[in-house]
Length: 327
Image 1 (tube, rainbow, N blue to C red):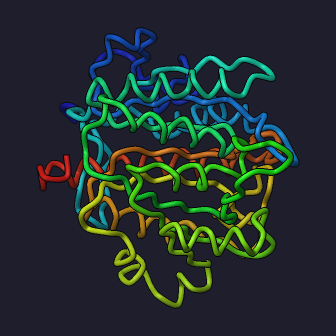
Image 2: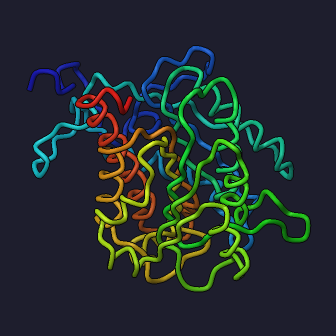
Image 3: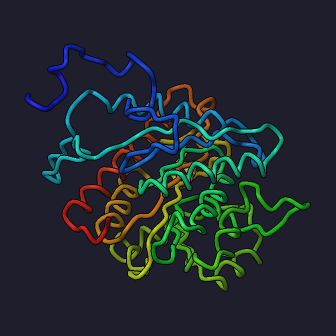
């Protein structure tokens, strides 16, 4: 049992203590970050076009993440015969970006500042939304000197294309982030996976997305292609930024979101894709958005989100340990 964390005199069960992400250390001073991965809450949902509630996503996902914090030095996966997130991987919770009610630009600027702080510290930024508009400041943060990597390719796992240019003057809502990302000179392209059914983006938006370098894959197309073929849509010469909208999953397992869309992915379909990405590419940043806990009294949506993020972090740092080129 040595090194498993049980020898310190406290059992520290999941329901005990403060609900930081995975019950990892909290660092409120962003200028003093020392971490391999830094978790930032972005509790903003003023960009929604229907049901609000994603502002409570960071709290819900953090609370759920305590389920996976039993004090072990890492998590052993018998299928992979690997221990993920051992004690040597430093994960720190930065708390939340400050949200100014009714002020999208100020709120987004505060989120961007948090992502820039993580990048400046050499940490992998992991942002928990909030609605999908929080991806806009996340991507903006990669424009400055804090990030000196290769061009970014965005892997979006989502039910909706989110490629609206402007609607009644709105350019920074949750229907716009992939359009805003594609406009950045340092974004080399997008792979948009899970897109299905009626979308908030009109037909011309799909044409624009493809013209601006996007590959669009539905759930049914992804299943027909298989994970290996899907991974080939990602360029080898770009870093990958992963943005996950929880509504990419079928609402039968993730009902706690503002815009559920039936016919979505199941857990292992997404997990195997993420593991393949982590094994073959340098992951430069992550956000997971649109968890709205109040629509799921069982808490299973928040648990799913926490489990996906913790597994993804495990895959990334396990791959980096075996291939320094991915770091």
